Figure 1 (cartoon, rainbow over the protein chains, first blue to last red):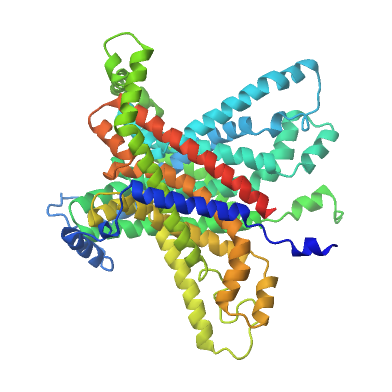
Figure 2 (tube, rainbow over the protein chains, first blue to last red; figure 1 turned 45 degrees about the horizontal axis):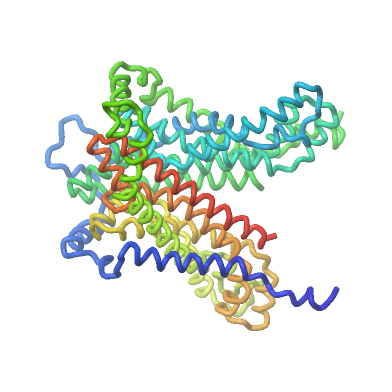
Length: 294
Length: 306
């Protein structure tokens, strides 16, 4: 070993460039938005709101703070838990659509299923199919994924609300579409990056193409795929809570309403229920992931 | 007969199994089914007459405004798009971009700083070395307390969704770009702090241990043996989170902050679905552009990590 290779300095090039560009962009953004530090400091009215709101942080409401409570209304903790349940329902229903759709698109967008390396050339038509049709299908799937993913779920919700009116299906579809795009992207990457040894072994043993794909390519990637799906469910719950701001009966709706009527104690109750739901889910999905990937 | 160690029977009966995973996966499979069953969701709702009327109105309305009562003409449509871009379109897009860049800069700074006390290997009485007998119990307790406190605060920071944070901040700070920047920065600090802590914990410990054995202080170890090797991965995470920042920044404007979202909610309130669609496509273009930049940065960082 020569001394030069021992003394090779660590490469700083790309990293410093990236950080320098970020810094420059941040300075440019600061001037573009005409920001000033004095604007972060709340105005007098802002201080009052902040004080009223923050002072209730440690004393969330246990009873409804509304002036008029219609008879037969359940108590506040029940409303909050019901809203949390609705939040989970919307998220789960959306994932129920996003997983199959993401799986299908992910399958079409993974390059492994039609690469020559993977699949034996059995006859002429099959080869033609792979040569001409597969790249088209693959490109189509990729474009589809990019389009689904690039529109935020709230924007999908607004489009669906405009097109359909306030229907629970608008929220479910709004979460399901972008999430299926993200799932498809990650699924296809995981399948493409999974170790190929099993697939090669199956191929040389004479397995059919679907067998190679299912047992040689998908199975090795499956733990990662499931782990990522659990993480996405966490994200879906967050999105479903936020979609409440647009009128769906999830936690966001209650946070907006109680905040608008300045019932800060109630707002904190709903916020704590939301935080608890998300933290519990994070712990659950975190331990699932750890066990799956160990 | 006891099956042979490499037989299929043996491998099948001795495969790793976890009751927790079995229950979790069953729940994950049943959850969506149950929610469709007890929830208020149905496809037939979409074919309801009222929905179809609504959809027809929407489809009429997404036709560009100047073309609504005449045949399609590309030159008029193009002029409409250009007018729109010069008036609010381009400005709003750039503001959205600026908000996301500032947010990720703050989050990167604070996330990296908070990642240090949140790394278990660093935040203990005797980092990187087997515990000596000289440290008192209260010192162990104090370091452990700092670690737990940081981890918990990071979890709190990231548990409130950006949109709700921005909504709450808006009431306090008032309109402007700050509520959006702060909301994105706070949420992403929580995420980047945790990812950074995990990166530090997964670094090979030998360089740190040998520096420590030579008597180096924590600050020396951080600047010379932790940040340089961790930086590639940290930048990789910054770029991943920046992607989501761009996505979220388009939407946060709906709360009255001067990004794309502001004009989206304006168009929505006035029922100008042609403008709405154009703004959504503009946001989608920006997100795709962000994805491209971030993919470029990531491929560079992956080269460094190899």
